[in-house]
Image 1 (cartoon, rainbow, N blue to C red):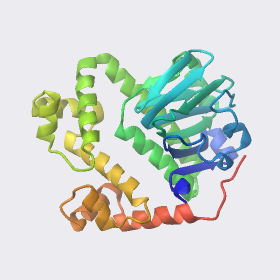
Image 2 (cartoon, rainbow, N blue to C red):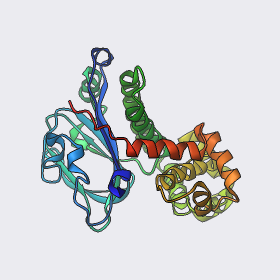
Image 3 (tube, rainbow, N blue to C red):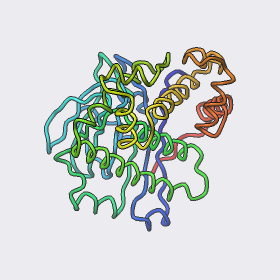
Length: 308
């Protein structure tokens, strides 16, 4: 049961309407791979062509974007050789291009992924916006990118009317975020470094909480500069960004069926359960209890993933 809570995947049928939009999602999911675990974590949750040889070498007939949010490992493809990857890195896979990757046995990793196809995806490739020669993108721990993946996963779970078209739009948004983040880093690397350092401080203190003024002091900049830099690069204040990180962490904790909402609030050092619930609902639109019930229902569903 622990494995099921740490892994989710969907392989989707693609209808003619989604194809007409010229970019469509084929599959998506996430996996928390603990140190020493086999990879893929649950091979039977994937079609054979996807699960087989992922660590030794395979070729897919689709694009994939894989985001590592913790741990480290390696990536290899015929266009750029073998390289190390770690938390904050994006691996971009191309159709027909042989590749291999897996987490380190010492650290494991957490990954999100989404697979997609369509004429628009090929145009982005041929227009030079993305290329197999640069399959690794050093994005850092970006909350907007994580939110994109979470929304993809949520739509894959719910499969409400028109979800295939919405998934295609989210894939394009995800690619645009990657491109925008890299463009911003190139234009002002010094300010980008301040943001990355502040994010790292936030990540280290995501459980217990930390004042924004202390973050600025730790990074070695003034509060006003940190505020301006964050607004420029993320569209959020440092406080808003940090609060989103803590809400994301709360979602992870609430996936544990043995942990109550009150215990999750205490683990994140919120002053009480009621304040935690109010903030959670303000940011997500639902209460922590409602989120927990929806996750439990999704994890325990007997429905198998559809395969193309």
